[in-house]
Image (cartoon, rainbow, N blue to C red; front, side, top):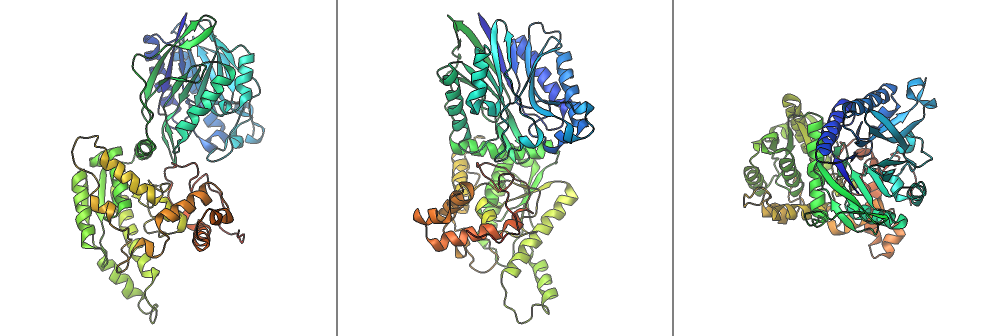
Length: 557
């Protein structure tokens, strides 16, 4: 006895229920034609993950119900096929207000036009970017259904990170675990996820199949990488990362046990952290621009490492025809910045323009001359230059419809080394969760990988090796006002991402002056971060939904 299973690893759009349903139908029809009799879609595949407060709208929930019916009816003629569809469910149709409506993060088993079973997720995550307890009520019972003589235990994402749901599925007669997921990416998550699922399989001594979402949704990215594990936790098959895919699997009975047949092709090695990170950033840009229907992007290209990295990511995501770079030199822009910016734009084949900000800068200073009389130039004049650039970029965006990509990194966002309405002005912050040290690593990684066969590094070497500078005053260097980036980023990671205390950082060998200075900067610049554009989350704690601190607070550690 064998059972053909297909994981449809697809990229859904939040709120496009008819479009998502069509994708599921087409994939299920293709899988059925290839012999599959069980098709698994990711968590909340009908509406996309995560729909946030749309779940509170009865009309949204009703549209999800209609889409589930659409899938069931379209596949009704495929005899013997079971399709697991993720969707929100509840009694919203009779609810007068959201306060009395019970909603569930659910999955239904559809077969021949009928709903055979519906399962409600039991473990609702409420940490990091997750807010599921705001919207859903936890389920309280297992779901085991039968396909061609095989009893399948259904779990949803977080359920498999706890022991009880898998154990109760086993007790209800499950012979294989099917786990459908929408698990946001961060660096290292795929290894962590695989290890936990292996523990789950071994604990109940059952084979496990993991169906995962792929694509970008606002600040989160999903990496796909769906897989199948034997009962001993060993990996038998895996779908590609960051790409839509139909993963075909064969489950066969070996005596009383079920095992996965070995794939015809050898398993590909797990991608490196930098490769995964690059693909996450590219996917985040591609989907944010594409799903929001922007015609293209533009960014300020300074000749520095941050804007160079963002340009390379944008071109990989969208192609050169949808990317425009604008160099806006000031009185303090070095000649090599012009040269390197022109060189990079030419290498990548993007439209490149130069607009001097010198006339506007002089006009601002003239307008403010009487007000500033007797006062020395300081960061005020530096910020004026940044804000002129932001104004020019936003004017181009308004006129031509392209969205502005900001180029600030996580180290700058943490410490406030960025200008409100200046370099923070824009619509999407590509590397806001990428520390400066990692910016350099990514630039070198991209130069070492040439998917287009051009034989030319996209980022000129001098951009990577020259000391970083905002070039807003004579001979300025970033490290004039910040600790060395190796020290700065380590403090940010340990304090902001991992919640280590100031005393523990000092005990670990960091200078107390550096620790207190950096942590103070993190605290006092919360007001800036609240006004920054949404950007791609690639660590387990980003400045976004993961980070929720008051702006007004007198607490000091």
